[in-house]
Length: 114
Image (cartoon, rainbow, N blue to C red):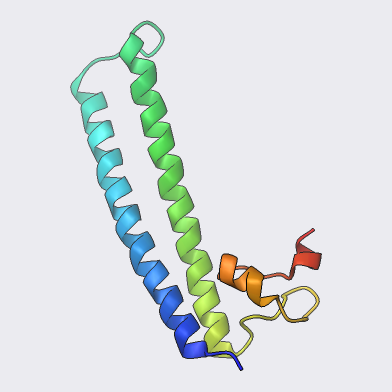
C-alpha cells in the first residue's frame, strides 16, 4: 500500500527546495544583468563580454528549468490529491515504484516513455 501523505510531503519539500534555488538563481541573474548594464561591453570585441553573455544565458536557462520543474511538482501534487498519482497518463498502468522514486514527477511508465 502506498503512503500518499509521505509522497505528498516529499513533493512539497521538493517544491520548497526548488523555489529557494530558483529565487537564488533569479538574484544571481539580476546581478549579472545589472553588471552588464553598468559597463558598456561589446560582446564581439570585449573578451569579458562573451563570458557575461554566457552567464546570463546559463542562468536564464536554469531559472526556466526550475519554473518547469515547479509546474511538474504542482501537477504531481494534483495527481496525488486526485488519486491518479502513480498511474501512467498514456496506458493507465501503474508506474514502477523505482521509476517514481527516481523521478517523482514522472507522468508515464517506462514503456510509454520510449
